[in-house]
Length: 413
Image (cartoon, helix red, strand yellow):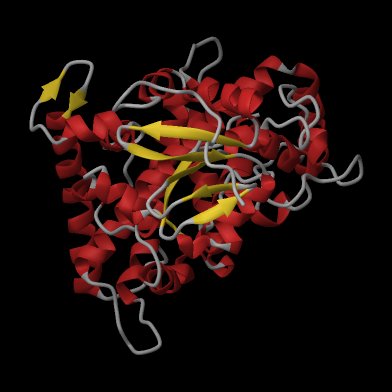
């Protein structure tokens, strides 16, 4: 037997909990968990379902029953396919597995030494512009830095001259995609103050598409492996000799470009914010960097000798994960903790809530990198810490992102 009514906020007729969710997503998620527990009813603009909290739920959604929880219908119901296309994040099995196998070589570790060198050189270029006594917006600086890194590692294209304009275009896509209401109103071909930015989004997509299409055409024409991601996608073949079409390459590049840019630049900004507030942590990290690097930029081999640096980055990702919550649609009905959710239910899981559950992370509001030190205590349980997701749909760029985060943090400090 299963319970028929999932506890949770009543919401408003027709729109559910859209207002509190949109106003302050983090508060909505945390208050729901604290008041109702690990299964919380969630009604949203005609969707009905639940937020499932905790490591066990994360594992069930991401690993044990991942084929039952679909991402594509979320995009289709939101009518956002015209924005994201058929990028890897936005498709389901079996296409997702097939496309992932084609893309995976671009993130093979044998290329990481070259990628890390590019990150090192780019960071040095940015730091050379910084002057003592001059105030800088760290978020803007990290935004431009990561955009240049992506241009060089993904396309062998120096975007420094175009960084600000292209970065604004990427931000526009991310801004609209982060809010279902913005996606809905973006279908209007004009800006609607406070609600939709359809005209701005279309201009941003045209700018990004122009860059990506020129790059794809050049790589297909030259047919050489320049060591970047687009070379791998253009040359990729599956077991039967099949290859990605130009539109598929474009969609995957857009997805990788937007996802990698926002997540890494935001995490860097939050990391420096946390370090600025915690001078004891910063001093400890500086001692490690001084002892191991002696003032030199870290190589890829050096990064493995900097355990406290990794702990700092992981703790930053715990405090401020790149995605606060993620959505899926249930292909078939299922029962969880005694509650039955029918086929078509909206299923939400939250890295932010998981990372702030006292049962998993004691004193979760405290910034304490040592919690990731295996010599100090037990590491967090599997799937309690999910900044890059998990299972067959885990972020392919997780290792690349950690390498970039650690390299930049070390060099800036």
